[in-house]
Length: 278
Image (tube, rainbow, N blue to C red; front, top):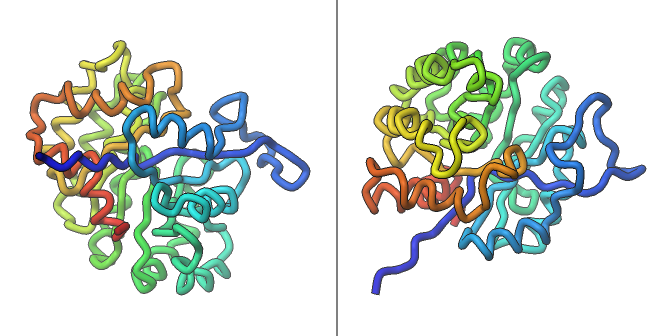
């Protein structure tokens, strides 16, 4: 009897209701009007057959990881974390040597888009510091992929993971998916760079199974290979577009260029190996 495939979602957000001690950053709004809690995600995971999830704490509560740590503490076999860090404060470098001592913490997630893109130059201390500490970095930097070529080259021991194929819904709406992929597949030559082929429904203009994304996904797989590509949902960013189970079967049943072994890697084995999540 064949062992069941391990399925790991490489990105989901969790958040509580806003309160006096859990305020949103002014001007930022959550992806859904209601909280998306640990219990809600667990129930959806069980229904969809998802074994584990990498929690990426959302931006609207600010640079805090406490709710994600609560999830990983309560359910250590189900959740790991790529945590947020106050990137604009150079004193944050002192946190890195003991970063993984936090429950479930596997690395750091950074955002370099819109007004945060300036941090690429202002806070470039993070890359050598993370490399020295052995901390993987997931990063979302649409429109800034070319700036990561020298970073990947200078820091070959730094694990860099591109989020969401460097795409946004705005890029998709402008017909810019192919051009954005042009920029970031250039990073495939660096073995320390890999990619989350995540949030695909959010960039599609067709219903499930999102056939207009097929060729884009194949191009990414052809560049990086199955051991450097990670399925993920970012499901709260496109909740009405598909059920959690459909997001699984989009990859396992509708991408004809993936072999069964490819699916084993892309759907779970690859991200577990890259983050050393045993």
